[in-house]
Image (cartoon, rainbow, N blue to C red; front, side, top):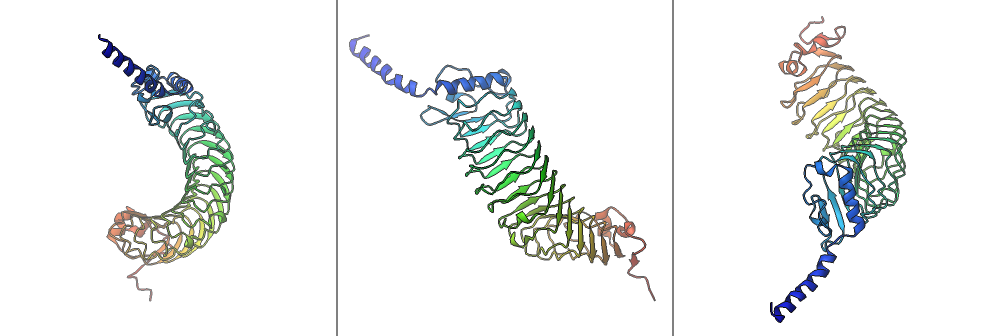
Length: 389
């Protein structure tokens, strides 16, 4: 090799060295990744390309995304990758933005998340994690947290200093105690905490909320706290112990799905004819009385369940509802005649009520009973063609 070529080669080596060094993540981050691999059976992952490679190769490992200069780990995405076992401490990943480990076989406790100050998206759902929900206050950049479908127990930790949080899912666990204050979560749009053992009432809610699911808990009391949710689109409070009047939903023009089944709501059903986006109306198994309000103009309505209440008066006209598929109004005190259903309807009940025995092959088919009125109250039923005089 001549002297000139030797100098050129040396220059290339000197230029490459700092690039190689700058591309290496900090040792603390590397050691945290290696601990994750060892703790969750990395050799048996569905895909583990690159893992355990030499220092400087971490950004090419399966599921790892680094900053543009390769100097720090920003994302871990090992969704449905057969991770088995407990999670190690993750505090060494100080710049982590995204943590997606959903649909694996993780067990044990959730490690501390607060040291990961830049976390924005955390999806750990559908594993077998246990213990308590870790402290969350102070995660200023966190916008989505999904810890659903686990064996988490204890109470929900205080929820404050979370200014970016828009979606929180804690459903399908074993959480108990009251819901913490949510009033300071000014960006929150979706809260799911159903299928737990939560008790007490509904705390003050942020007006930004668009979706609220608290089904299958032990919550009680009234629902006045819902009054200020003017952007509410989906509400599910089914299978709890709520009582008192139904909420005034006239201020919820965006409402699409409402499920309040199996509570102790009483009083009349408020008018719904202004809810033009409504698709689902489930109010069955309560203590509601009065008449069923008009459903005219609800062109998006698909599912109605009002059975097992104390409703009276006529069955409303549903013939002009083009998308209606379910219509369950049985086991009330309804009277009068029943009009023909829309072509879209394929499931429903009309009995037991005291309805006029009007023959209808369509209702026979929908109720799977011929004639449809044979299951109604035989003491109060009458034939349209019977001459009373």
